[in-house]
Amino acid sequence: MRTARRNREPVFGLLALRPALTEAKLMTEKHACDAIYVATLAEELRRIEAEIARAEQMLHLAPADHPGCTPAATPSVGWFREKSAELDLRLRRIEQADQRTESKQGVAFRRPANIAFA
Image 1 (cartoon, rainbow, N blue to C red):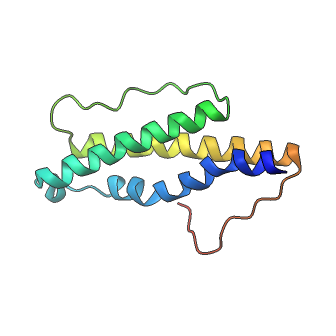
Image 2: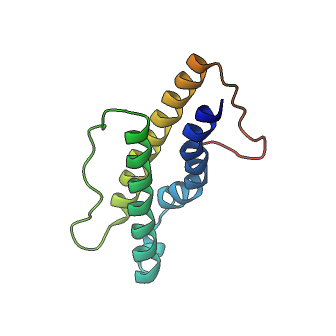
Image 3: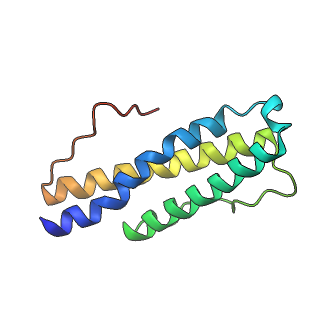
């Protein structure tokens, strides 16, 4: 039982990434004019990608085909939307793999009621 809890900690931590992914999906041209906002959000997406890659490695998932998280020059609105969609798909893949793992181990996992999933 202790091992199952330890293995679940990374997945619980990933739940906090959803708001940043949603924010990137909602990026507009007006937001893109703010250089500090763009740089901060791009850095946040890079951090999220690193955390997702670490969780994929921990769950022994083969890396999905995805490009690196480095925009050419200044990230565009389209880049933010594409990258957030890609990271969201990878996050869902991790959650599904985690659910399969917990069903095999017989560990019951209940999502907190106050967390909304997109």
